[in-house]
Image 1 (cartoon, rainbow, N blue to C red):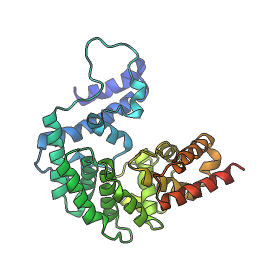
Image 2: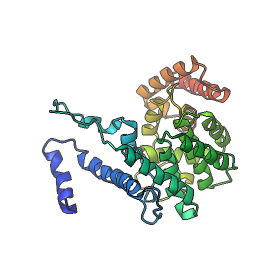
Image 3: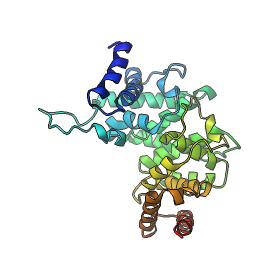
Length: 310
């Protein structure tokens, strides 16, 4: 349909009983489809950063969840309100489906982008392609990600170099998602007590939707003024992800620790999340998944909880 009809449809559906967020999710779905169709159409060919949708803006969680839905098979949590309560007739796919050949072409394209995007103006394109490669289970891709870590993860993060920081972050998170969790521990250890902690918080705040504006590059992550966002939504999100089985547990725990240190009021104003944090910490410390640094962070959070509960 043409653009005008689409806008009118987005406005009409809630009046017909659809959830009020329908139009917003449809527009996000268009962005996700554009990323997928660009990769599938291009395959191993190069698409420049000036027109590539992966270079348009820093992705939010809602968009990334839609892009990866065909690969994870998991309904994005924010779409739970759309679950049909009526039994469908005949076979219906539970989500978007890509054929094996389409998946291969999409991931081949991400690899081509990651290998060729080397200019500073292509940093966002490359970083977001590397992150999405973590959903490619092929052994050669996992091997490539390890090589990426050896290049980016071992490089010293200098001052406010967003590119170096995020290349290391993307590589370690991607490897953890692929089943190799060693490097995410290294990344957390190297960024502790450095300006990179602030950048990590700002990134998470944007990812979860606490920052109001769209970001067209990564420089916002080193903004020292974090007052415009409260941290309440991020706190809730991270507390629900302190799971002993999570491949990203070291980064999640470290970020919760940094967030509470910068905003101790979250523990006094968010009672339900405070209780959930205590339960999660008890579960973590009863296992052997935490490193010495992780146990120190858990102990610090336990102490903060005791103060908040007085």
